[in-house]
Each structure stands twice: as structure tokens, then as C-alpha cells.
Image 1 (cartoon, rainbow, N blue to C red):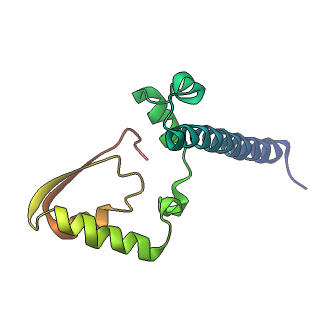
Image 2 (cartoon, rainbow, N blue to C red; image 1 turned 180 degrees about the vertical axis):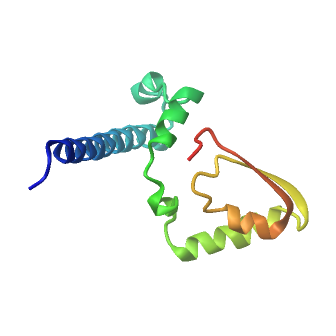
Length: 128
């Protein structure tokens, strides 16, 4: 039998997961509306009402993000990622230079950058 304390703790964990899932769904819907307008080349209601570009909103969004996927949820495939590293990062970042990575998230590009540069500085709004 579980204690009231354990039940309350479990309920808080479930509520937190549910809140996180709900935020992710809301963000995905917002992103789709923004992407649709971008494809159409219009500045529509999604863009005009979007206020998700402040530093506070970015910090809130990315601090609450589930980084267990390492950011790889945005990689189309391992081949796509490899091609981007080969054709963009390695092509345009000279070996041995200092690099500033802005918004590294979980660091999905950081390892490739470390192999290229003499010094890497990463800056992110989220401490996580």
C-alpha cells in the first residue's frame, strides 16, 4: 500500500508530464501555422499574433523542453545530419578557428564543431 505522500508525488509527476505534453502540442500547432504562412509567403494571423520570440519566452520554452532525444527529433535522418556536417559545417568553418554556437540545445552539432575548432563557446537561454 502506498502512502498519501507517495500518491501526491505520483499525481504531481503525472500532472507535470501532462502539462509538458500539452505545451508541446500547442507549440507544434503554432509552428505549423507559422510554417504554412511562410510557405504561402504571407504575414498572416499566426505571425502577427506570435509573441514567442522574446528572451523570456525562449527561456521558458527551451527550459521546459524534453531534451532526452538530444535534439535529434529535428534531424530528418542520420544521412541528412551527416550531409549537413560534411557540406555546411566542415565546408564553411575553417579547421582550427574559434566558433560561437548559439542555442546548442542538447548539443547535437557541438561534437562536430569541437572537431573543427580551436575554441568553442556555447551560449543558450536555457541552463539545461
